[in-house]
Length: 316
Image (cartoon, rainbow, N blue to C red; front, side, top):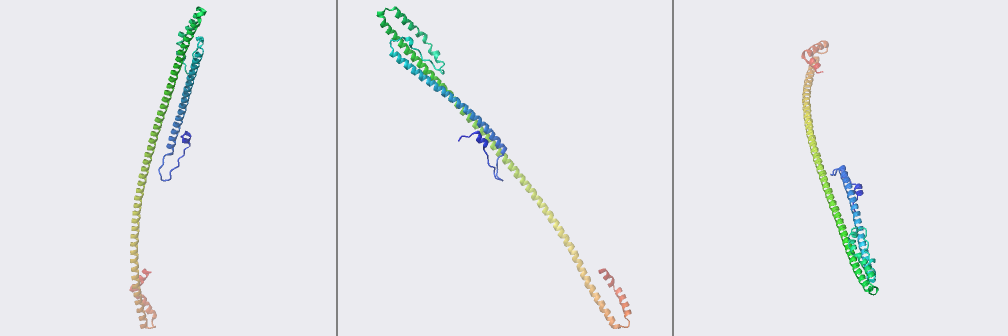
C-alpha cells in the first residue's frame, strides 16, 4: 500500500512510559509536516509525468495508426494500379499524411513536379499519333505511369516509415529522459529527506542525552547538597543532644549532691534531736515533778544555746 500525505498527516505515535526516553512532539510534528508537503509535491510531479507519458504514448499510437493507414493506402493504390494497367496515370495520388506527420508533406510533394509533365506528354502523344498506331503508345505510357506510381508510393511509404520511426524514437527518448529525470530527482529528494531526518533524529537524540545528563548532574548535585545538609543537621542535633545531656547530667549531679547533703543533715538532725530528747527525759525523770517550769525554761535555754533551733529553722 503506497504512502500518501493523508497517512503522514493522520499518523499518531504513542507516548513513552514515564521514565523512558522519547522525542519532542513539536519537532516530530514539524518534521511530519515537511514530509507531508514533500510527499504531496512528489505525488503531483509523478502524476504530471504520468500524464505526459500517456500523451506521448497516444502520439506514438497515432503515429503507428497513421503509418498503418499509409501502408494500407499504398498497398491498395498499388493493387489498383496493377489491376488497371492501361488506366491514366493522373488518377494515382499520394496518400495524405496525418497530423502528427507534419513534415511529411514537405518531403513527399518534392518529387511531384517531376512526375506531373508525364500525363501531359502522354496526352500530346495521344493527340499526335494516328489511331492505327495509338494502342502501343498508350500501353507504353500506362506502363511508365504505373512504374512512376510505384516509385512514388515506395517513397511515400519510406518517408512515412522513417518519420514514424523518428517520432517513435524521439517520443521514447523523451519519455525515458523524463522518467530518468523524475527518478533521479525523486531519489535525490528521498535521499535529502532521509539525510535531514537522520540529522534531526541525531540532533534530537543528542539534545535528549544532553538534557538527561544535565538533569542527572543536577539531581546528583541536589542529592549531595541534601546529604551534606542532613549530615550537618545531624551533627548539630547530636551536638545539642550531647550538650543537653551534659547539662542534665551536671544538674543531676548537683541535685544528687544536694539530696545527699539533705539526707546527711536529716540524719544528724534526727540524731541530735533524739539525744536532746533523751537528755530531757532523763532530766525530767531525775528532778521529778516539783519544778517542771524551771526545767522547761532551762531546757529551752539549753536548746537555744545548743544551735539546733537555728539549724532547724534553716532546714525547715
